[in-house]
Length: 319
Image (cartoon, rainbow, N blue to C red; front, side, top):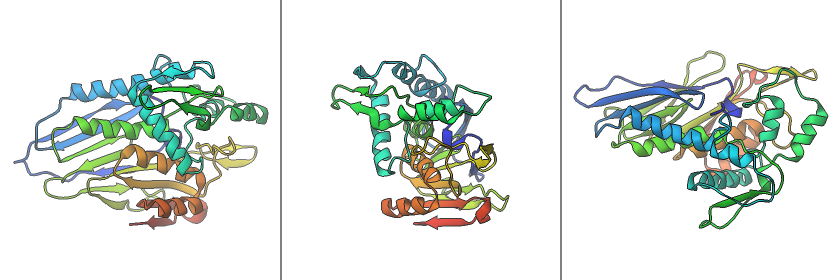
């Protein structure tokens, strides 16, 4: 699975896992998936096996990976435009959800920009040279999930009206977290994939505590999760210069260029990790003013951290 466009070089959630009462059965599973790592911690209840977790994550990769040319999504990307394609329930559901968030965020969350991802070398297809404007404009003309059409719910068929490529990197880690949580036979757990986290119940009678990493090495921003998920997008450690300007590795779907955002990161709390993942990605692309308005409109608990030019000021909304 390719790394998220919006988290290309950063994992900005730090797990704070306190010691547990040894009278409770504690299980901790760790492994690799989607180009990153995962941690699953359960307390009490019946244990799920490591094999079961790994098998489920492998299945998710086989559906959504853009690095695997034989994944279901990659096969759809290779289909010609204007052809109906029957897809799995899971791919249909995630794409339908993604398009709804695309509308809610005024297009700042847009997994239909796979061609732009490739042009900039942010995905599976790496490149040494930065693209020219002609190449960017050509990719931009075939980049929007708005060109993806869904048949009725029963048929689970989709088609693209332009030759777009879908890249679900900015939502599928969250989807993986939510799906692994369904495997667990306990009410007390924490699941994390690449910094996207979902918790339930308690950590030995205490609430699950996490810290959002601060860019200037200040103390992490403490967060308490109460049967909730948190996802963070940002890219403040690495940047590059293109045509004399400094850019992050996050694409603005409205321009086809790397986002000219004043945000270092955005962290969103939501009951579903995949939804938090998508909103956080959109917020970084749109910048602090629109991100604040979106968080207030949708009543999303959010932490925004401005970039170095704003001295990494922290803005808390609905918290």
